[in-house]
Length: 133
Image (tube, rainbow, N blue to C red; front, side, top):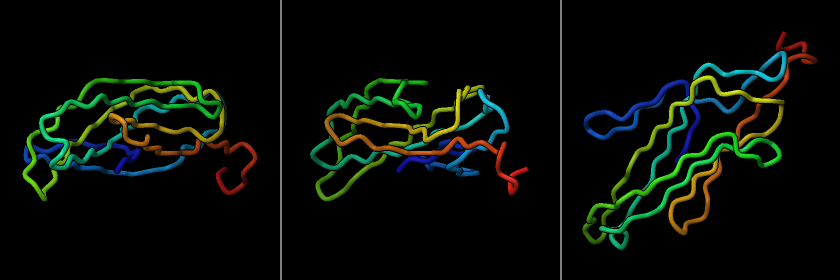
């Protein structure tokens, strides 16, 4: 699971709290600066993953695939009893991010050898849209 939102945090109990999920940003002019957004995602580990480290990479790609933001690291899966699972919540707060033009942007999360997970969102122009003016 991954979302783009206005705000997100992880509580003391480990709950992921998310407010204001969105999938598009509208702007009259480009480039445009978005004051604050939060990219939050949850990773699940099963019994066979327990006690192993997994490389994690998060990228924000523009419409042509150029990297606008990247973060990487390693997650260590705790021991998981057979037949159970555990989750880990990750929150990235991005302040003052610039979008050079309208188009389809996407966050791509890669954990270990798993297929990358993509979270797309639109940055669209309001210049020629009478419904948005």
